[in-house]
Image (tube, rainbow, N blue to C red; front, side, top):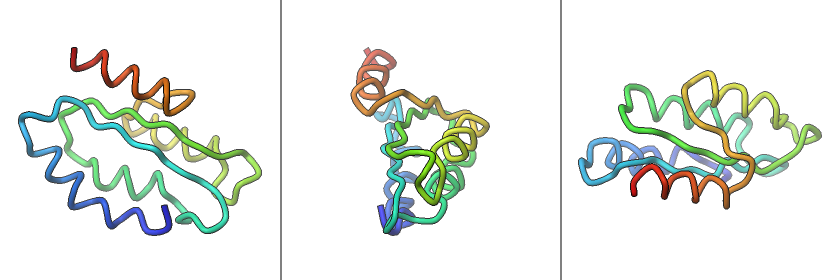
Length: 96
């Protein structure tokens, strides 16, 4: 949450792994979170040929603004679910 770039190595491995059928993420906003967590995730997903699903936890009052983060993810082809529970169900449906 504080430094999302730490997961980029794991994302790269998941993208390269033929056994991984979908990428599922929680993007957390707020004070103490990265200034642009969606931007970091989008950079890590460049070239990914797998579906990516995310939930964005936060509000418009957070420094990162929920709508800006969600819009950036959508523009990059990431499906933004209304909650992490919905994201998990959607991800499960993609691989079943």
